[in-house]
Length: 94
Image (cartoon, rainbow, N blue to C red; front, side, top):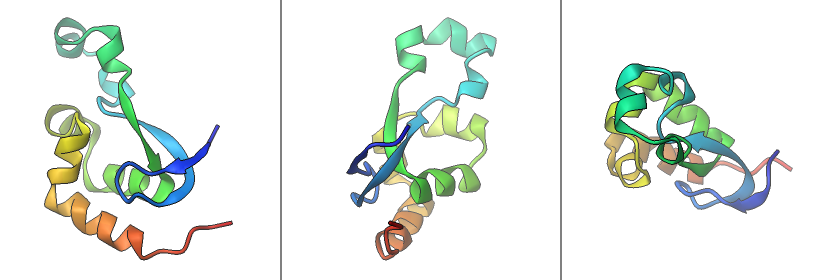
């Protein structure tokens, strides 16, 4: 279910989706079960579809879980920043 608020990356006002900072696919792995509690595994950010899709196109789940498990890490990455700059210029679908 999508709500209309602001994307936490591109800051556009549009329908958003929930992005798990540690992808759900990684939750069942022993390392993540031992080092993170359930609340930490469920943390995420609200992103527009273009930003969300771009992140998953650029990086696989393991890379996202290890290197990009916070909003600050996502914002600091140059590849994601380039994608977000492109997204900001796109029209919002009605």
